[in-house]
Image (cartoon, rainbow, N blue to C red; front, side, top):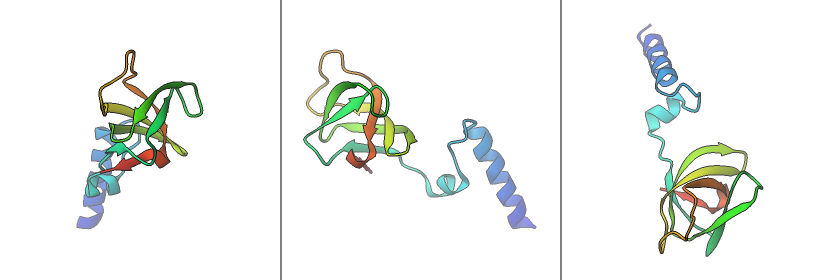
Length: 103
């Protein structure tokens, strides 16, 4: 009975803490870390949408935060540009997941 009540409380907390539905009880208990960096290539295209137009190139080592995922793509927020941002650099965009190394 206590375990059932604990599960219900955790599920309600996750629902109200993240109403867009991207959370889970497992993620809550494990502490999901969505920060990381660009890796696997010297420069990686950041796009307007999955398979969309290229907005800029992210150098390896650029720090990012994953905001959402769609199949093999992740929408990221750029936390720190390695080597400094280029003129007109975007704040967010889509990157193929194979180039993201989470902390």
